[in-house]
Image (cartoon, rainbow, N blue to C red):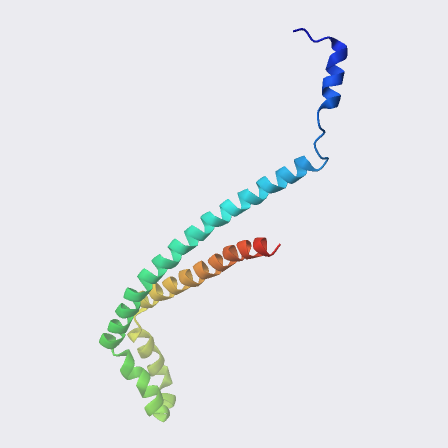
Length: 137
């Protein structure tokens, strides 16, 4: 079967015309899906970070507690409240003593784990809110 040039115009005019905004709607849908996929990845990463920071936080807290007891920090700290007059008189000797008794390494580990935990919670909430805004729209 042979189609003549005049018949091609008749065939194309009979085809339905797509809506004018179809391409824009398709592209917006693709962008939205890409954003959702990226948000899912970030939710997974922040959830993993949250679990790891909790896994590090608990042992570092126990280690800090043990090192505080061994270093005599509790004795110095309680002295601040029981004999404040003596501490006020000898504060120049007391301040370095209490700082030396502070286990810095365990304290750094604990604060790092706490900061990572808070950062993970913040990132997780931001990315979960992405889906809440999307469902409300």
